[in-house]
Image (cartoon, rainbow, N blue to C red; front, side, top):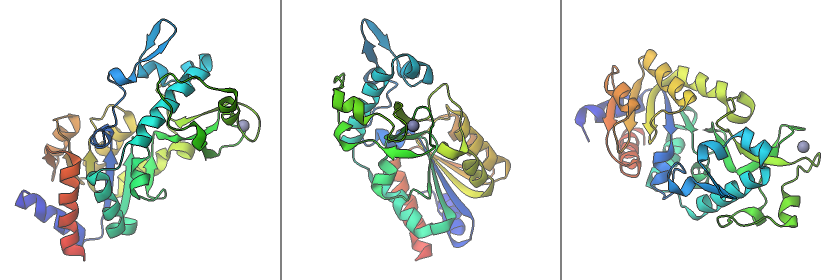
Amino acid sequence: MDTHLEKILQDFAKGSGRLTILTGAGISAESNIPTFRGPEGYWTIGSNEYQPQEMATYRMFKQKPEEVWKWYLYRIGVCKKALPNPGHHALVYMETLFKDRFTLITQNVDNLHLRAGNSLEKTFQIHGNVFFMRCADECKRSVFPIPKHLTGREKNETLTETDRQLLICPHCDSRTRPHVLWFDEMYNEHYYRYHSALKVAEETELLLVVGTSGATSLPNQVVWEVKHRNGIIIDINIEENPFSNIAINSRQGFFIKQPSGKALPDIFQKFKAVME
Ligand SMILES: [Zn+2]
């Protein structure tokens, strides 16, 4: 590791500033979860092929709720087979080390951070979590786990009557929907911790941006907020991307062109060396 970077990490660790991690699809890709923007994401209904950008919308759910559910139950199966990787584990160790100074903001809906062991309190799942569902009519604003019976489906597996019953809201008999933020929906605090994420960004001294290229608005806002406040931005990505440019051009920024499964354990070791 670059000695200048090592010093910045260790000076930060010895202080009392907040550490925020922003993760995206790259860290999940290292656990073999496809981004679903590639060929794995296509979904055939009748003679039409739909792309994820069309499937993951409220509009499609209103038109073809059962198809949308089949697509999500298949995606859950893919996520369930995946395992957290060394990058995920390093973030769990960082939470243990930094305690209240730590926040994880993730765009990933695959549940791998929680499965690795990060706490729900410290993990802001700003795009939701595919293992959970909620009432599509919002009779109550609660979120509940998708019954185990439904998780782990194959592509295009038809829903049985039992499956349909399990996808009914227990409170009002309406349909449930996946607990995810769709492309045609807005962020909010209640389900996605929108304001909390922005507030954390305002207080962040060191931001690690991991495996994301900034295609969505809230991650962009978080990164720019930290930059405006002269926080330290470290971008970890196997490819150059808009965030690596922001990092390089900020006051104390770095671009680590490595997989997160390599970079995050290394960073954790630098923190640990001065904190224990
Ligand atoms: Zn309901």
